[in-house]
Length: 414
Image 1 (cartoon, helix red, strand yellow):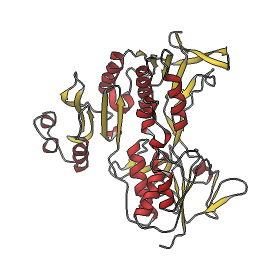
Image 2 (image 1 turned 120 degrees about the horizontal axis):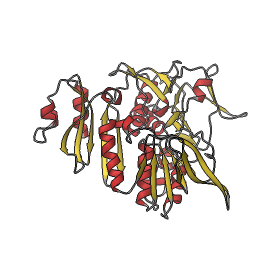
Image 3 (image 1 turned 30 degrees about the vertical axis):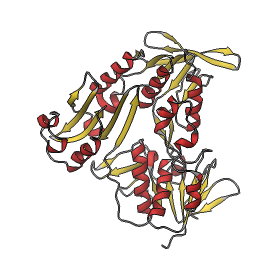
Image 4 (image 1 turned 180 degrees about the vertical axis):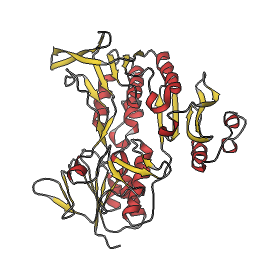
């Protein structure tokens, strides 16, 4: 090894995975992780699932590694520290006016931030976002007593998972969205309609194909607090004690952009996760790399991407001839319905799914085919099949749709 120090900017799962991989691959130089949050790197999926749903959960239960692991592997972690500048002339990460660290290789793993609701009243008390561990704790405290009027803005995964949590705690829940069905961007209208029915069965109300005009606010004991959501579609006012904003996420590209790196919907990177500067890499939510299977860029904000991207970036930093070609994967838990999705959302977007199993009983697998090849699969309350789905996607061979939908035919034999 000729390098002296690898610096990882960002304190999430991609950062922790990259640090772990560097040590696993035998790198014995300095490894530094710079995280803006006060916590050690942690897993984000629990924040809208088991952590949000269980008041007994402690922050450390979400950590990727405990403090001892970083000490034992000689990984220097700076928590609560914001990297303010990436100096590509002197190869230094600037932390503040008086401190900086040099690097031989740098990895940008700064993640993403919630898309802000730019609405009158959006800065009032009672308006919540969900991105960080602290966000999840605050929202959990607000929901846990039940009996509150909760309005969720947005029908994506965060919106629907927080709606499920709010309803499970015994709150009245209304979801407001622009689309005709929830989750249509992620899984299409057919699966979105199924998830809409699941939520309605649990008492959630939907106000769809609506635009929000403003959040209504009144003075409260602690200052201005939200009291309702007004739409500009029909002038309706939805009473609210709590508003959860789930309008998507925006990659944290500021440090890369200021350094002159190429940025467009994330930090642009090669299939080896190298940015436009040969000593700087990108992984996780912030990275927008070329995906070798698609032949175009694919930015993903999911758990598996943080792991796979962090691992690949670390190996790439070590000079190994790797490319990041993982099949995208994510999962969701809402009420008693769990699912796993593997595949390429852009390729599945214009196709109709075919089904295996009991759709009405919510134990089924949905398959999306394009040109006779499987491009995505989603198993709902059916387990131990995601690996087979991913194998079939990777093989890229023509499959028989009739066999694929037949429960008596093994998936790999379709």
